[in-house]
Length: 168
Image (tube, rainbow, N blue to C red):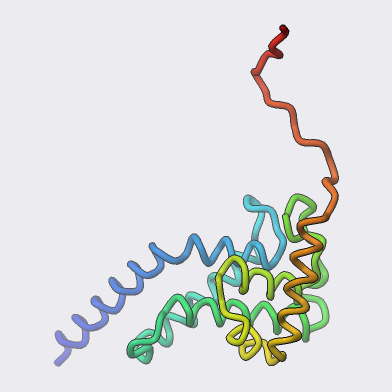
């Protein structure tokens, strides 16, 4: 009996490790986009990822055919939304990193844009997850997309190092 339990726990751990190996990078990138942090300085995104993975691990045996990536992504999104929109302080106290492509957007716009465009979540699913109408999600996504596409560059592109100018 004890050996069977240990075997199940070892199998569960291996399955979860394989899931993390495949999904953690993409989830971290999504979390970094949500928090609008720099890739190399993304403490809040790493915290969101850790919480999402811990929740997914806690629910691992109850998934029964559910997609663990979807479960982790939903938790990541709802945790971000709850922290950014409903608590004073938290993610709103820190400013987005100016180099983040989504720095000019508010938390709700970032969340909808990341879910719809980066993660490919359907409009209706995004609306249901966030408790908004599909029309509202569409309007916010359109506005956020336009803002990102039309934002001005804050600084000129850096010159390439070690490249000599070619003269004719």
